[in-house]
Length: 201
Image (cartoon, rainbow, N blue to C red):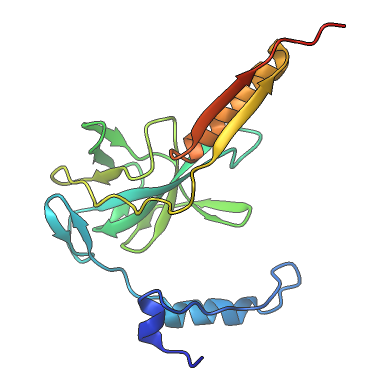
């Protein structure tokens, strides 16, 4: 099949690259292609209308949450994509779902196992913020009027179903901890708990 940029941008064609980050083979061509092929930041639909990336008001939405990014700290990271305006570290923004203002402390830019502090970010950039339980996938933050972006597409595959066999108290606590971690990462998870009495003898 011949590569066509418009077909790629519409989601009808997916280029495939071969390489190895471990051996540093094919990495640079991949990044060059990414820069050439990736579209610029686009507008997003919200409850206030279309938000253009050139708008001066800062806005961003949470598209991913991942726990245990740092096993030593047991932290949870919320990943936000900047949609408009300019992000600055320690800025105060309005959290649309919680209906209150929060401070964006400790923003990071992550690459593989490394992370670095972010002082500013612009439309199209992705920043990671330590999440003390205030962010959920789909949340919107802004330094202007309250706004909520159009919900992210729901998964087309069957949501995960977790089932635990809690045979003793220690295993039960461990399973519930793992269950809570997965729920924080993926709100589509359905829970299924199977408790059995500890076998005698």
